[in-house]
Length: 329
Image (cartoon, rainbow, N blue to C red; front, top):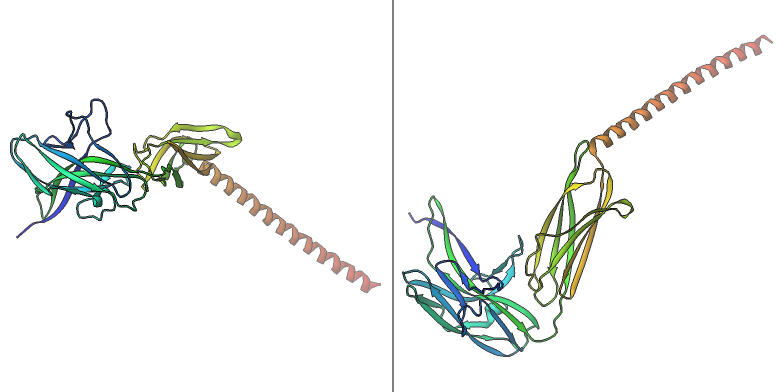
């Protein structure tokens, strides 16, 4: 019986250049732009006008002693919703940018052990291409699937990609948006500090890649500063049109206060903010206070009704006595 496989693609992409520059490398093979000097270009950075055609070359280096066969393709890039990481579409997904415009001279290559194969490619930018950044990658996918065990085997296919940063000439419009700010809280029953989870969506609404930063602040009553710190989970790059859901944990929320929370995001030439608020009140003392107030009201009403009944009985006895006196007269 044939096993059913769930295939997971493990993709490694070149990181932003850090001196010394390095190509995308998973230990078995590397993918990098061809350059006059080794490791001079760890990624492609290209500029073009709408309607222009560019040519370049990508190198795939086999670092093992055995021949390796790869599928080569160009892909569009995006930010992962979970953490905002730089990721690319798979070969079977629909491409609209670099993945649709780039054509490699060879779609499959076999690289002998400890050798490098260079593949030219062309990138034809459509005449109606929108100005701004169009990120992507040139990917070398190992078509072998490493099988797993069990009835439902987990197969892994590894890939390495060299990033492509393409900018189409035209107006550059950096813009950010902060939305869907919400606060989830864990409040103590009696006294002591609580914990708040601040969640928000950060979106690049412009047409250029941004390297944003975010600030988390909280003000109490009378403007007292409760929290002021830099958000730690902001992605290094936020690509055009992409959004990411981010979460920050605030430990040590006030016991009794009104907290106004603001998330402010900034990037080169762009800024945005959003706010939310909550009341910090310890549950148990509040419940006890409510119960005491309810008990006082109940006792007061019972006494009021008792007093009304006594007064009515006295009035009746007075009316009877007065009637008897009137009859006697």
